[in-house]
Amino acid sequence: MHRCFRWYARGRKLWLGLAAYLWTVTALLSSASAALPWESPERLGLDPAPLKRIAPLVKQWLDRGEMAGCVVLIGYRGHIVYFEKYGHRALKPKAEPMTLDTVFDLASLTKPIATATSIVQLIDRGQIRLHDPVARYLPEFAANGKEKITIFHLLTHQGGLIPDNPLADYEEGPEEARRRIMQLKPLSPPGERFRYTDVGFIVLGWVVEKVSGMPLDKYVRKEI
Image (cartoon, rainbow, N blue to C red; front, side, top):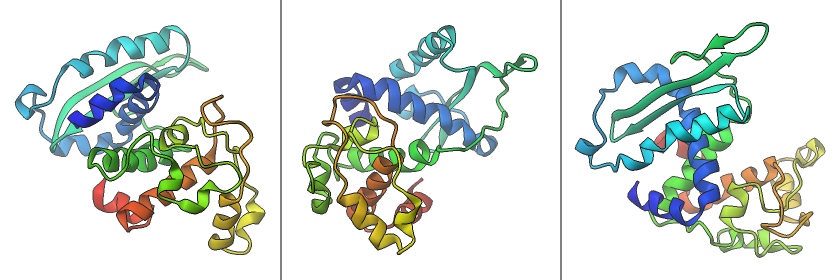
């Protein structure tokens, strides 16, 4: 955990984007919170300072209209250290205040809940480095000018990849779909612009599989 906070400090974009995203969507697991005891961060050896940044950060987003509301639930070493609600769960047809048990639409939350969390765990364990080229773990990914795309670029949707590959890619099976993704040409240089992409997170799932020796779904069931 502490190593994660150190590299968050080195990458402010990831701190503001990935970390807050992870903390926010973890609220989807709030139904399990009743089974976990509360404890102060200090008694668990966790620096409370980053937790104090959450409320001001969320308030900024609410004030700018970037979201209607959220629930933030943080667990550490089998204990709850933070559980708060902010803003509204609905604005139309009438405003409804957020509640701690609000149910959220999953949509693409596999990205932050499963894939990004798995990558962060592997970084914290020293098995992956945030700014390593993806090709260090998946050599075939370097094809067609992708050799400089890093783990960080994919986590923050700055890898220059297409948003989605065609569904037709999967008609001949997952191996053929993987081959076609590995052969993609980037639309822009890494780090140049933000472009939301499912493909980048598919690749990150393969990184988890390569490093851990388990497919992403099995890794998540075991470790998350």
